[in-house]
Length: 179
Ligand SMILES: Cc1cc2nc3c(=O)[nH]c(=O)nc-3n(C[C@H](O)[C@H](O)[C@H](O)COP(=O)(O)O)c2cc1C
Image 1 (cartoon, rainbow, N blue to C red):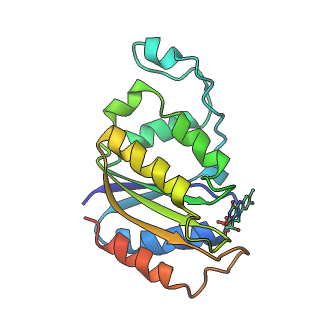
Image 2: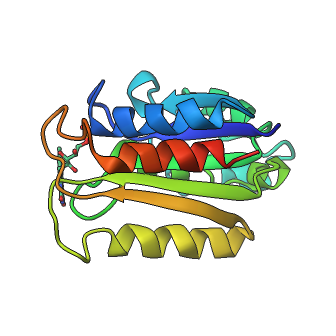
């Protein structure tokens, strides 16, 4: 039984990212404690690079917004799931803001050792996810985190486009494989 936290980066409720996340969570919940943090429900400012958190003994971030609650949740997370729609060949800005706020030594207190990437996009180009994959794998290598799998879905643009896509079963099975 692991604690799995999903950082979900779409603000379009019940959109393609949400549907993919739901499928993953259905599988992962069989053997784990799973929580979804949707950026749509949190107001999180970008990191301003002041490095106050490095100077502060308790590594507090001086920005007193909803990221403080996310830090608390990540202190108890074994497996981190990054889920995002593609926005201009990257992850969404709201999710990137959350990840950038992990530029804080407090992250050394997180037990995260494994990660998953879920992503959706409208285009069907073979190289569509290359930049996000590079960012994901480089960050994992930097933090010595193991990749458990990725589910990348092309050709889903409008809300509901992902319905019936085989990627939903892939995400479910990936979730189910996690213990
Ligand atoms: C601001 C913005 C930028 C986008 N940029 C891209 C892009 O670069 N490539 C692409 O294939 N789709 C792009 N899309 C389309 C979304 O990735 C696609 O509609 C996705 O299914 C949205 O997921 P959601 O339903 O979870 O919000 C963009 C959408 C928005 C709103």
